[in-house]
Structures are given as C-alpha cells and as structure tokens.
Length: 334
Image (cartoon, rainbow, N blue to C red; front, side, top):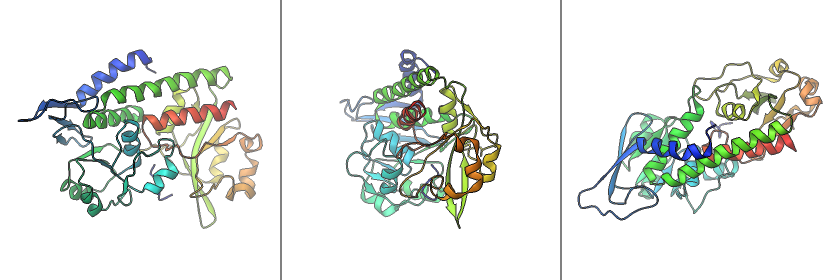
C-alpha cells in the first residue's frame, strides 16, 4: 500500500474549456523575446504566469518543455497532453499502476513520490517541476532552488471532478498545450456519455456499486472503501450508478477504512469493484479465498465481484478516468 496514495455536451466543452484555460494564466512578451509559436499555446518568447493550487504565482519564460513530475497524476496529465517528462518519480511503480496512460520517451527516475532526489532533479535542468500539495514543504522549497514549481491540489472530496479539471488545465497552460487539453477533456466527456448509455441499455442504471482496494498486514486484509467524495465515486455516479458505501471518507480523497466484517453492511445486490496489481498481489482473490465471512457475502456468492484491469490509476487525471470508464463499462456489460 505504500506505493498508492493514489455531463457537459462535447460541443459545449470546447468553448468552456477554452474560457477556463484562459483564466488559468496570463502571457506577455518577454523583453527581446521571440514571438515564434511553440506547441498549441503561448509563443516561446512570451512569459506565462500561472497561479497554482497554493496561490503561488509561477512565472515561466515560455511554455515548459523540460518538465519533471513528482506524482503519478501529474505525470499522466503531462503525457496525455503530449509532453514527455524528463523526470518521473518511481518510474517502475508508474508503469505498474498507471500503464493505461503509458510513459513516452525515456524519463529519468527521480526517486520516490514522497521524497524525490533533489540532486537527480537538478541534473536534468528542468524548466518546470510539477508537484502536488501532498509533497512535503521542505522538499518543495529545495526543488524551487532548481526550477519553478507548479503545485496542484492533490484532491478535494467536495469537488473531485472540478479539481481534476482545474489541475489539468493549469498544467496545460504552463506547457502551452491548451488545444490538446480540450481534446482530452472532450474524450472523457464522450466516454462518460457513451458509458452511461451502454450501462442503461444493459439494464444497469441505478445499480449499487462498492469500489475498494485492500492490502494484507500480518495475514489480515484491510479494506479501503472509495466512499462518496472520492474521484472514483464521482466518476462512477456520473455513469448512473449509485455508491453503496455508507462510510464517510477523508476530506481530501474521500477514502475510508474497514475490514471484511464491514462488508456485511453492503446491500446484497452490490456490484463489488476493486483494483489490484501483480506487484502487490490480489488480497480479495487470494487471501480472502478461504475467509468464511467473505465467502458468505451475497455479492461474492452471486459472482458480482470484479477486478478491474491493471494499470488504471484511480487517482489520475482525465485520461486515466477515460480509461477507467471504458474498463468499468466493459467489465459490467461483458
């Protein structure tokens, strides 16, 4: 577990995204700067000023191209925008948990997500470091000595989808990839629209679901419910399903905690969904296979337990959520 911490119409989306992106930052021509275009956004000789998730103004000489990402959600955002990050925290972990948005290029591993190597980051000479508010303040200060640091809010259980979009648009402004951002967001909205229809056509509208992950400690399985307010809950309810968890999640990620006995509180007709990975094993299929309480659950007995495909980072950005929607719909309608 230490590795995880982790509908608008499409035609209207492009216009609203453009307005939102314009509000994320400003550009002005730098003294003596060129006005040659760079990417789909600001000219390379224009300064870009973005107010990040902490209220800090981050000023760049032009669209950032040599970018380091210290958290997997921002790395996924960069990749989906067509930006090849030069440095990524825990590359092996990203490739295991977020392969649905595969890395491009050959990024340098900068260390762990919670403690990136300052020396390694400095050796890459980035023009922007994208981090989240989960990164310790002392690490942020050290990174600011190397390059501008753009911090996005890690999560907000009061509006996960709004926060996800704000973070994504902020990164797009800083990298001059606003056009690409509009397409990624449009793809997400289309996936939700198509998925909602597919689930309704399959008679699954209003179905109760419970999404979770789990880990084994001293032979006991601890379960982490994705309660109301989690990103996964918000996306899945957009699809017309109903979150069966009655537990209250934390104010940032909307995550709760329970054990196997706690699963007995779920409705009998729940579709139980979870994600795991070959790296950490599957506590539901393996450790709980001989657990009497687990085997007695109605949704286990009816075969309504579904492991979603590996590689979809459930704390990710729009591209990850598009992959999640597609995987969920395929799983439930198979």
